[in-house]
Image (cartoon, rainbow, N blue to C red):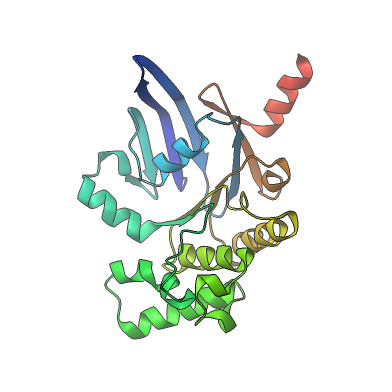
Length: 234
């Protein structure tokens, strides 16, 4: 069974009396352990799709299942609980809480789970070690570089051992060298720890780090190879 199954998902918004449809019966399958990148023009609906799969937003129609759970049928309360237990989210702008240390920022998702203080401590230590920031645990965000802040954000996303990690333009605010370091880290988490990743990006070089590349065109998903072939035929 596929880990993620998106079946003919449509999302519509109404703006100024007009209906906008960034997703038009889009379908997608992600297998356990894949690292999938998703590209598309600005405003094409990349983040919209990411948020549907992460359970942050609901589609207008269609079905999404993750690890066999139909998340489109869950109540708001159950969806929030499912999201806390199954989704790790890496933001573009880190979204760290400035008055909390790196350790405390990473620990936050665990406070929503029924874990002992000792187990939380163990998991935070493992997550910080995975991103190479064990020695920065007691530092505040203002004491960290942009790349280190993003590493804290990644540690926070993986600390609960989520079913799926989603990343929305995770290198969008970083310089080229730091971006490459973050992408290599994501690649290592996928290859060495077997984490399943879905990354939205506008950067073709970043997308190429994934094991599979998709593009959102006209509300529908196509494989990168097919997109290149289509462009060459024009």
